[in-house]
Every structure is written in structure tokens, then in C-alpha cells.
Image (tube, rainbow, N blue to C red; front, top):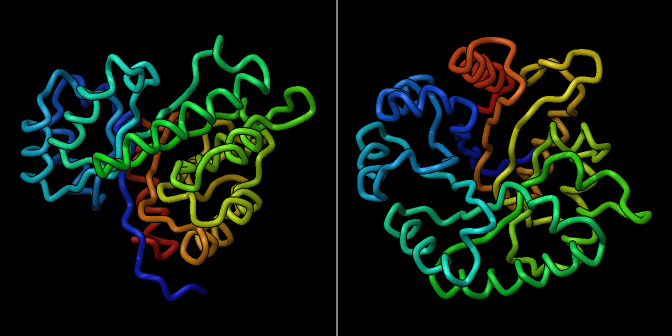
Length: 254
């Protein structure tokens, strides 16, 4: 087993988006009380960077990143995007998906890799990091290859591979294979369960090989944050994310 310092656990706020929309400050307070060390944003909820930063400070939470639509990285939007995240104190700017019209062919994925490589250079000048988060389609064969492989083979090491364990497994991508293949690039990892037999499975109830995932993240992955994301929630949202954190606590990760 690795002797690496314990990796902190954050919550992707998309998991509790309804609660965030109605009472962001109260939701952050409840998330902190559960024992989460940080949060990853999925939208700003009409708040300024300063207001968000104060809410985090008030609740002893850190920012583990943000999911930001690809359009916000286009040249006309980049500076405002970078300014907001710098003011928030967020280093990790993660694109959560690619519009369908921009990922029809492997050449599309190669063009996206070029775009992300340019972004990584621009971001570095602002002390920011760029990354990409998978769903399942990146692991389904396209022209005989997996788009994930084409994209990350063509991107600079500085482009973060935000690996979502459950989404990948749903598409046929095994987390251990990719944590080894792209060692050092999984700086933030989405902990999500997948079960072929139980569509709404929480962490520890499905097919993800958690001990191996944790060993790799804590040895060669370069992982700085574990991030819980619950999309297929068997319980009400806040209860689902509480139960997932409890499962991680039983695994010795909290």
C-alpha cells in the first residue's frame, strides 16, 4: 500500500444542484458538516467570485476545481473565465464534455487536442490548469479507436486527465488501465460507481475495483483530489452524497 499523504475528498456540486440552486450557502454548510474537504463547482449560481470564496471560507471548504463549458475557453471568453477563477482561488478549470458536433471523427478529437494544448499554455501563464472530464462515449470505438486514447496521446502532459471511474466503466474503459497509461496526469479523479446489475449504485456497491484505483492514484496517478459525483442517485441527493462519503470512510479514505 502507498504511504502517500491522504488525498482529500471533495464533492462535485452537480450532485446536489437542486439544493445549490435554492440555498447555496446552506448546502455548502451541510456538505462541510458531512466531512467533505472541498467542492468542485458546476456553475456559479449567479454569485461573484468573491462571494463564493467567502462561502467556502465560512465553511472551511477548499475549491477542488470547476466544470466549465467549452465555450468559456474560446478566445472572446478566456480572459473573463481566467479572471473569475483566479479571484475564486480555483486552479483547476475542467471541461466536462464536448458538444456533439465537435466530436464526430477522430480528426475532430485531434483538433480538440491542439485546442487544449494551446489552452494549457495560456493557462500556465495565469498559474491555472486545464483538464478534460470523461463521460462514456470517449471509450466507445470510433473509427476503430477510443477517442480518449487519441485525445490524451495528442495532448501535453499539462492537460489534466480528470478520470471519472463510473462513466469510463460504463463505456468499457477500465480505470486501472488508464491510470497506468497516463501516469501522473490524473490530478483530480471523479469517484463514481458503476454496476452492470444495479443502475443506481453508490460507491462500493458495484464493479469499480476501488482498492486498485486508490493504490494507483496514491502511487503513480499524481492525484491531488478525489471528487465524489453522484448522478444516478438511489436516495435524495444530499443523502446519496452522505452515504458515498460514509462508504469512503469505511474504506479508510476519510
